[in-house]
Length: 157
Image 1 (cartoon, rainbow, N blue to C red):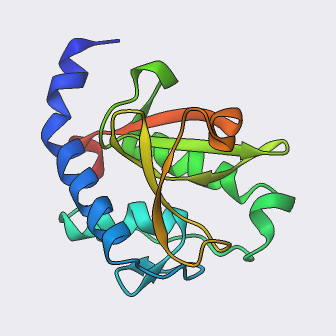
Image 2 (cartoon, one colour; image 1 turned 60 degrees about the vertical axis):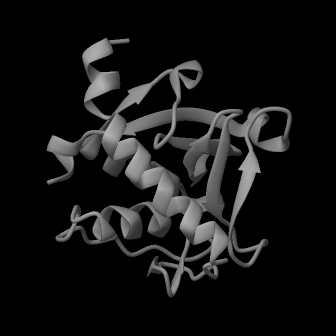
């Protein structure tokens, strides 16, 4: 991995992680297509936090049905959008502020934000009803962890 990339993104990563922790502590409710502290889904968590930091102001989430992610690949749209604003990195290189993407079945279907070593992520799940922290390793998430993205400040503007 390019060491310049790792150091270039550390302040942004820490800011993203700090806000994600706030979302979890506030128990921001799950809301399909929500993108704020009033409610969010897994992708809305990332978009809402980036907007709070002054990024992605013009981002428009494409329309998809709530159950589409497990059936028709809405998660592929998430991957496509993350490639526009970040770089894909190896799972073992993941650090605070990075975005782990999970696969269920054949397609990407869930994402979160790494907030601590372990790694620990904050994410929003309909079944959990609000944003929460989960350990990635030694949990069901480990088996579903597909890839990781690191957001790049210059690409977010």
